[in-house]
Amino acid sequence: MNFMFEDFSTRENFIDCDEILDGRGRFQVSPMINTMCRMMLPSDLIMHDNNNYLISVGVNGAIDNWAKGFGLSGKSIFDYLSDNYLAKLRDGTAMFLIDFSLEGYQEEWLFSFFHDECRRLSIPPQAIVYVTGNMLVDSQYEEWANNRSVFARIKCLPYALFEEYINTILQSSKVPTVDENIEYKTLKKRTGVKNIHQVWTFNCPQKRPRLHREKFFDKMIEADILDKGLCSFPSRDHYILGEKHDKDWQFYMGRIHADYALKSFVTVVSEPQYYDRELSTFTSEKVFKPIACYHPFIVLGGKGELEILKARGYKTFSDYFDESYDTLDDTERMDAIIETLKYIHSIEDKVSWYESMRPVLEHNFNTLVENSSTPDVAHVELEKYYKEYFDE
Image (tube, rainbow, N blue to C red; front, side, top):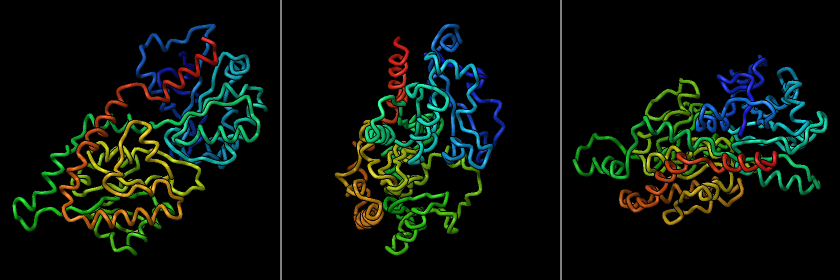
C-alpha cells in the first residue's frame, strides 16, 4: 500500500487547517494508518510517481464539527482536499480514508453526507473509506444502501483501535494475575487483620457525565448497591477512595486500573454510548482494561457489545452470571445489569466464584496479547479493499 501525506514526518494531511476542535486541531493523523505505518519498513512509505495512493485523515469529536465544520468555518471536510488530491480521487489513482476510530458516535445523515459530497465533487463513492469505532457501521451502511438501491458504495470499516492501545500500555504496567487477585482478596481472611483493605463486589469508574451514567448512578442508589461497589462519578461529587478526578482525559484513558481490579470481583464497563437511538456499539479502551487485569466484566454500553467481543475471540461470563442484558433494549438493559450486580453481591464465597473463572480470564488476557501482535481484521480488510479498488 502507498500512502500520501502532506507531512510525512507526522503522517498528517490537511495541515494548513488551523481550526481547533475540543482543544485539538480539527484534523489529526489517522490512528489506523499510523499503526499500519509503524508496522512497515521505511522504504514502503516512500512516495513514488505513477502509483496509487491512500490519503488519510484522523478526526475526533462531534460528527457535525469534523464533517461539516459546524461551529467552526462551516467548511466540509471534503473542501480541504487539494486540487492534486481531488484530481487523483477523480481519475481513480487515490482513495480517501476518514478515520473516526477514536470515537463511536453515529448520525443518521452521515452516509447521505458522504454520497452528497461525492456527487458535488465528482468523486467515485468507492474511493471513500470510513473507519469508525462504531462496530455496527458496516451493517448499518449496508442496510442504508440497500434501502436506497445505492450500488456505488463507500467502504465502511469498524475498527477496535483500543485493543492494541491497551496492550501497548500493558507492556509498561504492573497488572495482577489471577493468583495475585486471589491472594489480595483473601488477605484479610488469611491474616485475621481487621483493619486491612476492603474488597468490594464491583468497581464502576465513571468520569464524563452522560445521561445513561446519571441514570445508572441513581439506579445503584435505589437498589442499595452503590456502597457495595468501588464507584466514582465526579458530576455527583462521588469519588473512589477520595481520589479527585482533576487530571486531563488522556491520563484516565491511558491508565489501567489494576488497583480497582484487586479491590473488587467484577468490573462494570461504562461505555460512552448506551441508548439504542445513538446507533452505536463502541468498544472503547474501557472494556479492554479489565481484560488486561484478569477481571470479569459487565458492559453498560450499546446492545450487542458482548457478541462483538466474542467475534474477536474473547469469551464472556454467561456460565457465571446472567448476560442476557446484552440482548435487551436500552429501557431494560440497565435494570438487568442492576439485578446481575445484586446477584453477584449475594454470592457468599466470591473468591471461589472468581477462581472458577480462571480459564476464561486467562484466555481473554492471552487473546488481548495475541490480537495486538497480529494485523487487526480491519487492517486486513483495508488492504484487501485497496488491492481490489486499484486492481493490483
